[in-house]
Length: 218
Image (cartoon, helix red, strand yellow):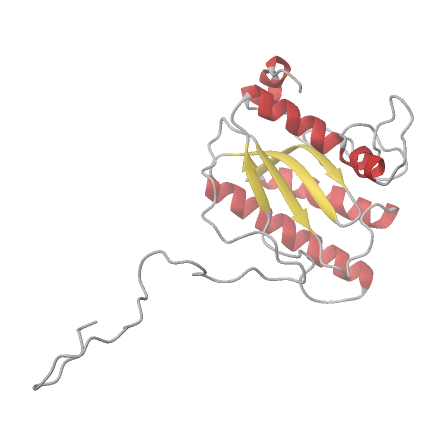
């Protein structure tokens, strides 16, 4: 934009700057509980797994129920079949979902999670007899690059319900595995077997296949 001037005197004006980085720039987070800042996504490479969190809007029913969990498992199975994203581990909480996933690229991850979000929205809205989005905001993704990171992420995702219970002052029986996760079979909750054709896929990255065993737990 050209500077503003007059013949007798040149006047400098605080002209708006539309280019470059600046604080607060960009589209603001959406949803009832916006919380994921709109920063550039971390680069996803095929050798690194990703910890993804999807949070539901407040009106969505408790996901830890037979009907809702069956919908989530079905959506994960279709996502694996589409091959953009491979879900290796997951846990379903009342209002959010944790995934440990693999993708060939950042674009593949975004495409796969968009498809998952659409499948969840259609099926949950059909169940709740509603319309509109069900995901509260942009998904949160953390790329895992070391065996220790992956080991901690697996423990966090599969033990997420227990962690929430402990914060509430509750206790889980020794050896208990969350049936609303890939930590244990869930008879009666869904028909799908947890194989490559079901809600989880066999890991392809070295980190999720065996590297995590070398990570030192803290």
